[in-house]
Image (cartoon, rainbow, N blue to C red; front, side, top):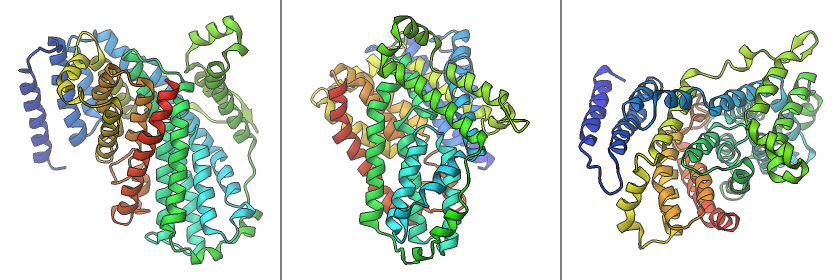
Length: 477
């Protein structure tokens, strides 16, 4: 970006700040709420146009002047919350699983099963199904990189190159499935954890089990729809698949190393800690449940990461902290922390923004059912998220929709998960998602050769969420 464009966007943000300072503190909005909006909207504009690194640092400073949070609360919200620890732990765990060959082991064993012999569409279905399985509890960035690497190698062997329909279908299918599970499971994924923290700041405490009761069915249904669209409707040309030497691949299957086995066991133990006490609380008894509730969700990650550095195999640690956190950047953690802190500011009672939005939209929404509002809101979220940051889109629609849904007596917890699902299903353009550069950057796919099928899947994901998952939310919550 040229310096001229940079300063133009910066000037627009300054003008927005000045104009918003004249917003009247009425209809439920307080003076503090005006301060918050005059910071949030310009920062949102800067995030969309100038990036999220230095601007997040600026946003943290500007929150001080709103009066909604004390400096100590801002610091603890950005850097001192369990969210940051959880994100570091999840990214580190994913790096270890990738480095020790666990993901590669699972993928290569899946694509050499006898059922895929001379069956190209079964091969595609198997790859995407295993992608969903691994994405359930592993960071989608690590999953995407490993799967793309393996699939590119197999396609080269078969004779498919970039731009060929079979190649394109496999790669975009991986993108769809990882997006679905990125939101469907809070295990190993940052965005659901960000939403969990934003919801908790607004008074909605959601457990991992509650999230999975909505997110997992949604992720599975969207993944199944992705497979059906590719294998039954798209049906990319697959005559060269006969070149796939299944027996040769079987002869070279990797073995699971001791390091990989230990890492996998550690991950499973962390998942058990997260899920079992919530789903089967009677197994632990009152004292153990009280202890579990006091520890929080980050504790097992902290212990597991430490053990992976302590346990030695063949004279070397399974990993070092420097290695497992090499992909964890300060700018990413800062952005996540500031987003959650801004979410806390927006949902604060002292700001009155939720009440103000509800009153402002009441003339339009009063005659609409909660379901109609959810239908429209989810559609807006999934469309917008394909062009702006997933996190920003999620926070924006959360702030607008949740007060209306709550006032209408709708299933707030379920709708929060649904909004995260819609915010994560972004695959249309190279800026659509954090992992989009892995797919678009090297030219594995292009906007042109995926636009038609991306639009189809975006609307299918939306339809599944609002017409199948929303009724489930009404039953559960």
